[in-house]
Image (cartoon, rainbow, N blue to C red; front, side, top):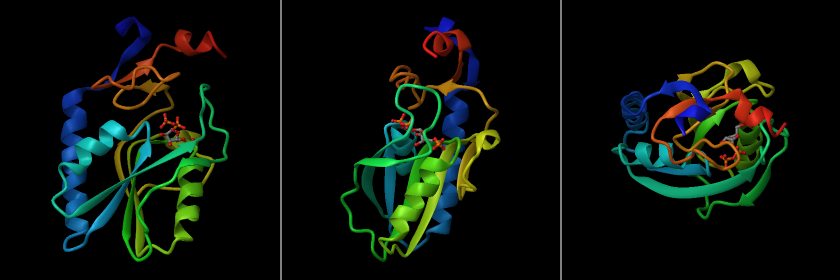
Length: 181
Ligand code: PRP
């Protein structure tokens, strides 16, 4: 499978060390508060499970599925909720957990939608930020790594549903996705 990648961008131990730091920062900022941590399926699942187990504050778990990319490499700019969260977030502290912010359309639309449910606060944590491709003006409250505009897979991120289970993040060989574009 390594022939599918140009190189490993972030090794397992680098990701783990950064997740540890993010968890410490988040735990400190939310001292004496309970949060609802919302995992945005499916890309954020590995990051989410590693992050929440390192938080030392009370955490309620919740999950949302939103469509944006499909099988291509470009975001549509619109979002559709495929699966909504189960908790009532009115007066709650909400932390949205994302794997990557690319155009920013998913997150900015989602935040506007969730604000209407009147949470006490709403913050975002993303593992990867690709600011070069931004269309919506949005900055995550917590960010693992700022990366260049490469197609990355692994640690939850996919190409056509493949590679999500890799414990590291790699840059996909362009030939892989150029074949289908
Ligand atoms: C990815 C990622 C974000 C979104 C970011 O999800 O998890 O939700 O795209 O892109 P944007 O900033 O350009 O809106 P995707 O729709 O690929 O679904 P997945 O998490 O199931 O892979």
